[in-house]
Length: 222
Image 1 (cartoon, rainbow, N blue to C red):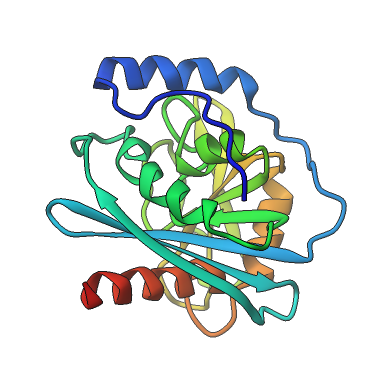
Image 2: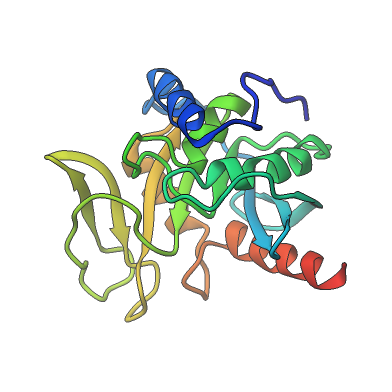
């Protein structure tokens, strides 16, 4: 899969914030896909010095595995809240470049616009890839919210000064919720619908759940 190189990754934290602010002008929250045939799940596992990225492509809605790729790279950016994309993206993009199939939607284990500069991992890479993207995180990063009822499919909104930036979604009955936000090229309602439709017997949707295991296995085998 070809990827546009629209900025460098070897930057300072100050430069990284400037890049995020510049890219935020390019966000679109309108659905930009006609039909979903393939959906990709993306995740990264870490050691002290390396990032192990995994991307898995599933048929939709059957969720049959079509392709999986892994790669790893040296970490060249410090751990700074709100700038985690600059640690994860180089390895993820390296894996995405290896894909033979082109997904219609990317689902990331991370934030979309539920971010102080609206530029979480899913949004940032959605813009770079020019593909529809969704963020589905295991924990919150930004915004205020209430806990949703403990019923699968129920959700509450994540807000920042009255602006809706995501949802706290109960993906499985009586378990911790996930934090869903649009990445790019999709609205919140559709992002929630797709997340739920790819969630089977576990808390996490299958694309990112399987990508998580693939990344962890890759780390363990090296």
